Image (cartoon, rainbow, N blue to C red; front, side, top):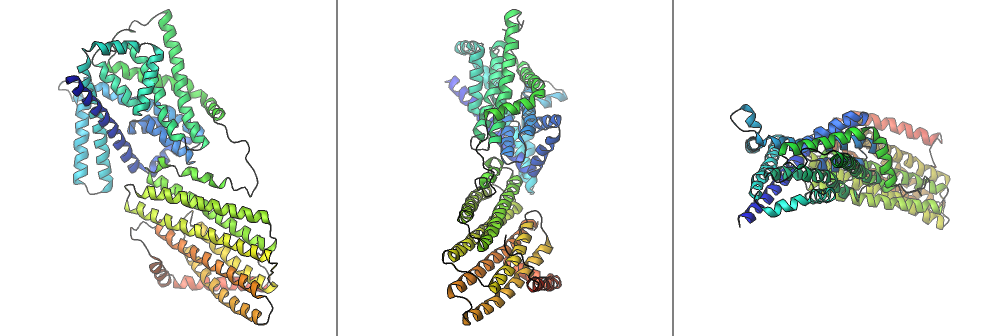
Length: 606
């Protein structure tokens, strides 16, 4: 019965360890946010810097698996390149050994100042400080730091619980018999790999070994294969996380596996060749916590030194193992590539809200680009209708819809996490902005359908109607162009110009409708052609309205104020504070477009 209680306590310690690790990594990512992305990106210019960053970040997160998952996510999100990710993975493998080095301090006792480094004492200090920050500090950042410190404390409390409980197994003959079988290198590696794959933490596996080592029943011959196996088993997490990712993200996981596999093979050959011909004097001696920590460090350090010159080779092997599709089309109208952008909406980065928000904006930028392309292609059909081009417009509209659905799902999942007020406001704005662009895509496609109907019924605009259509189209292009500039940065001047262009467009639209009615009365155009004319003007009006809405939402997105600005408030503020600038732009654009139509200097066909 005591054994059952001990096993339960050990499992409880393991659960506490994993929970503490998750708590630590989650709060570290919340605190660093965009900085973590920046830190990882800084590794791109130097291999040694990449290794160093991998060590530091992994030491902070206390898990190479978590760092590798982040790297897989960043490569999938096109934040990192495959080659730049390899040194980070190497560094992560070294960084994960620090946990074992800290645990070996459990042997420090006595009244010296160094006794404070004992993990039991350290974990209590972290939990106490974390609790005080969580309870008595009001700022969100301090509370996150408090949770992070509690996570570290729980991590080490869990490990120390396992170590303390392991001593209860020292007198069990069956355990000694089972462990002695693991001196077989193949079996030991297999067990180490399976256990690590199941608990998804190499640090936890090494911690379990260190706990068992306190019983004195495991030897170097038993432990070395298990440590080699756990380095292979830790790759299982990154492989799982890459299954639904891009080719390059899958290659990151492949590099992680290759690195540990090649390193393990080299160590097996060297160690067991030496043991067979010469022999280690300590081979069958009991191993202690320090010995486990040292071998874990030596393996990862030596593997990195050996494979560091082979980064290019590892990249080629991963690329060879996971090949690109060879039947890619280079056609400008090929829409199969439009959805590639969705790779950057990786759920692995939702725990880093700033990065997830930044990537969402990139996806919206792609939507905007596709909308603009469809609008131009649709207008091109008015001059020369082509069925194949019309189909490409339809396919691109389907791509816009798919991107919209995927982005909605991603942003909604992101909004369900614990976020700051500013992050929540940004997500609300992005959800509205992407919906506005999706509507622009719908109306661009509707424009092509109107022109298809004209083609089917052999309808043609008069020269005057054509000029009017394309004057308004030139205004629309100007508005859309200025709207898309918001995707890079906020520009108050763009806000004023979009509003001014909207008013100019409204003025011309009313003027052209009256002229159109006169042409109908004089029977200068057919009723069917007149309907198409009005429908096209209506499409323009709706797209312009959506562009104005987008400019309002970008104002909310870029401002740091927590208050959300409505359309009514926005327009009141614009006319009250920027009335002089608005009038100036109205005059400027009036002269510009009057000149264009009078001089026949319009961009008519794309």
